[in-house]
Amino acid sequence: MPLTVSGHHQRGQKLYQKGDFKAAIEAFGEALKQKDADAIGILDNRAATYCKLEQWDSARRDAKNMIKTANQDERGYLRCAKVLLLDGKPEKALEIYAYGLKTLGNKHPRREMLEQLHKKLQDRMLLNRKDPFTLLPLEMAMLVIEHFSFKQIVGIMRVCKGWQRFFGSLSPIWMNLDFSGARGTVSFNAVRSYIRRSRGLLTHATIKSLPVPQIQRSLEFLSRCPHLQHLELWVPYEHKEFFEKFKRCKKIKTLLFSPDLQIPLDSVSRIFNELPKLEKLTIWSCGRPALAAVPIGSWPSSLPNLKSFTLAAHQAAPDIRVVPLRIPHLISSKRPHPYPNLEVLRLDWDPPSIFSSLLPFELP
Image 1: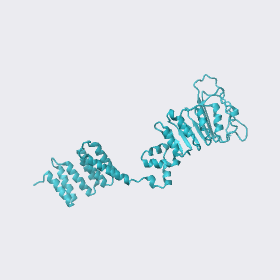
Image 2: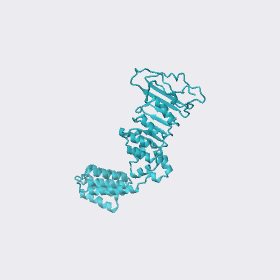
Image 3: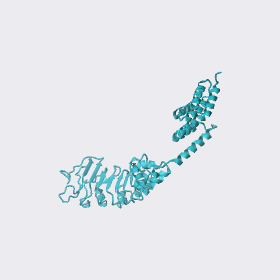
Image 4: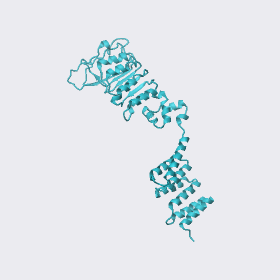
């Protein structure tokens, strides 16, 4: 007499109990071919049998078919997660639990069990997780961190509190503040926090994306860093305020003013006088005074450290009389030359001025 649907299923279960797993799989297969078969129950049993044979792909395929056949039956998610755990893939199992919780309704009678298993696995994984930055010697961790940009470091700190504490305690990585990669505005609280992490020892700062109401406070805090060597300002600001705040930063070697910050030409000499170690000065918006000339008396007689000098300006009223642009001591027969190390000179004037003091001109 041929076996009924339940007969094939029961035979498979008895063979499983006896340890005859291959025969059990054949019996479950026959049961699935029968009309009105309990597909979910049979697939569940066959997936468990495949696990005994460590045939993980087949077991996972049956479990996924359970989910596909009845996505509101919790058994599919439970079986699939268990297969993945036995196969040594707890991260994937956690994803299955999460998917099941997302799919099952809040009033599902077996949802609570799925939630408990999900939390239990999540807690276990947190306990077993190894933090590479705590396992590596600090010297090796620093070699890895050196490959991160400032934007990436800020993003990494949002991963967990442990990384926030670890990265926040490493003052060397906060020596270079670069806000040029910020996706949005950078608050004063963030600026203050970053500077404090450097313990006031930061050497490089690229200031950008600050909200206008907070520019004053942020630059005030930045100006208290006595070791500042490189400063780029890409924010609108009053040049007189800059001189008052940063005149104490005598170690600045590189200084860049964006087009948002206009520096009068007759104030350039003040920059050179107050920042004697300056090696590179870039001004992308230089205001032209009445005679377009720098007062020679206030200009330093020698700038031995200067290597790069860029002046750029755009005048909205070209009908004003264009007069020569003169930079003191640029053409000089003195030895040593007033600019002995000058390598780059860029003058970008619109409308063009007559560079009478530059032609003919040869760098020493």
